[in-house]
Amino acid sequence: MGIVEEAHNVKVLGSGDRVIVLAHGFGTDQSVWKHLVPHLVEDFRVVLYDNMGAGTTNPEYFDFNRYSTLEGFAYDLLAILEELQVDSCIFVGHSLSGMVGTIASISRPDLFSKIIMVSASPRYLNDVDYYGGFEQEELDQLFEAMRANYKAWCSGFAPLAVGGDMESVAVQEFSRTLFNMRPDIALSVAQTIFHSDMRQILSLVTVPCHILQSVKDLAVPVVVSEYLHQNLGGESIVEVMTSDGHLPQLSSPDIVIPVLLRHIRYDITSRN
Image 1 (cartoon, rainbow, N blue to C red):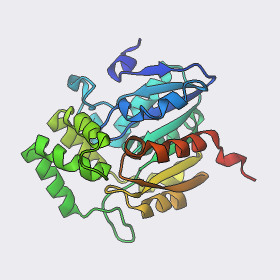
Image 2: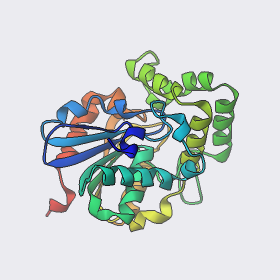
Image 3: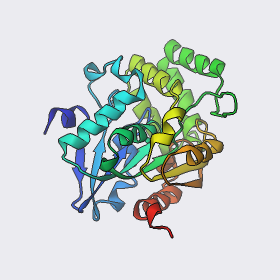
Image 4: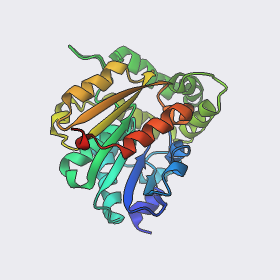
């Protein structure tokens, strides 16, 4: 196993001809895909990995400077694909990783046959003529709460992000992976994500994109999925799911897994 694979806990499952890469978002790790993976291993080579900074990775490898922009995560993705000698994949990116996949695809469109983004956003801050869902003051309060008492913040944030029942297995699971992150790393990654603005690069994305979004999501308003659809440079399609929350593949698998499988198998470019 190569250095990059080891650092990111890369797992390759299944034996199909085509490669599918599953990438997680903030506060989780590759386990967030546990409901999807069993449906893919017969038809695909499934690549799972952890973003640097996830609780499952070595915190000594986390370079605060490198990961102060989303490009750092995109370079990691390209390094993983190179080490595994992947020449083309279907990329499924949740939240942060939805944008990471699009950034990587700009420099290497040949590596991505399509990108499926779940709960992704190019910008979280509201702006003139743009609704991202957050004001700066709200983000400042969020960061301050993380600094003051990370464990308490995790306990409060997890049910809000996941949605639904506070006692649900999905909330407990997200609380666990969130709390596994080292607090200073979690704060740094949250700041990178919430201060990111990828609007200017969307027109440079030429790979077909499937935009999947919960109808109710604390972090990403539904209008953001339409904004992505209108501004991505290549072909794209939007599906707003009846799920609740920012981690629907974990909290509403019965709704989300069939939708994901449909988009994995359906190519926009084959539409007439």
